[in-house]
Length: 51
Image (cartoon, rainbow, N blue to C red; front, side, top):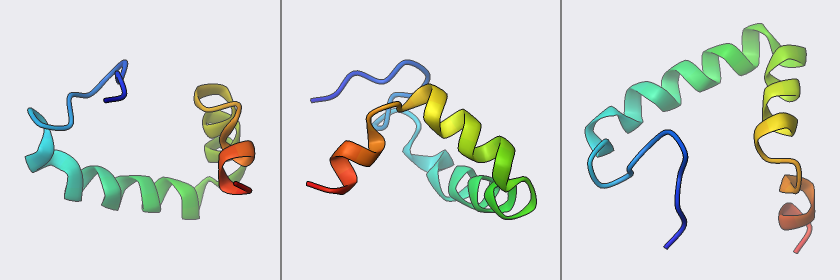
């Protein structure tokens, strides 16, 4: 299983819906900043999305 730096998906599962809502809000309202954060945290995301 993947090791996450800031969350434990089992422990924090009750927070997932709120985190998803906030992530959508940030992505819609601040798209450039959201993109920069995604690239910083997950630099190889594009490689996985094209698999």
